[in-house]
Length: 325
Image 1 (cartoon, rainbow, N blue to C red):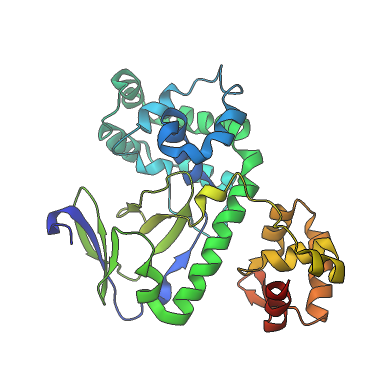
Image 2: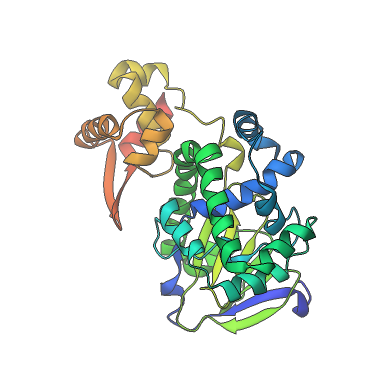
């Protein structure tokens, strides 16, 4: 257990567990990728992405982004606002960044211990203009190096959320946090996260937002007041992000139901949505939906609505067919 002075401790009231929710944050992944750009050795499984984008960024001015998102230590919190909905798009999150009050941006920028103090000083001289420049630079960086890759990243994050949502439903907070991260511990009525600073407070009815990340793997990060409490944790399977494709279909199963349906059935080792399967299979959602309908009519998969999404999973019969092949 870390020393009391080096941890974040959120105290849960009896109904706070019910307010735990998952969300995705494209802007968090974008911000974390700035560190990957400068320290690829620590994130070697992202090398395929680095090779794809490095030449595109050769003339980009990322100095102010790098200054406020240093390689180590504190990142300005206004750059990674807590998602307001489970599925925010990048434009919605960027709008939150653009609307950061200049006085808050200045306080946070003053805390950065980066390697480019002149860029920070320029920001502090006119924080309102600084927020606008920072936001514009983020938008250009997103369009140049990230937007086309977000569907693949989102598919990996979505699979993790579906798995952990089942843990929460089956075993409550204890099971959810049991393997989230070595620095995260559930102590019955509180969540403790090892950090290099101290914070202790009740959630106060705000709930806790859990955000999976691949680009800041293997670290865990937290957001506290004045932002809504948020815990960013490393996604399971991050190393497969740039290698995952349609799983190989067993020959006998492919001969029985067709190769694409066999691949989809094999991919449903973990429950997934139509959109996640479409991204993995490199098919249109409509095509995947048609195959899922056939598999469901045949008793091999089942559907369940989870919020606005429909999640598919294999039935025992589907499991038997895949295992037998």
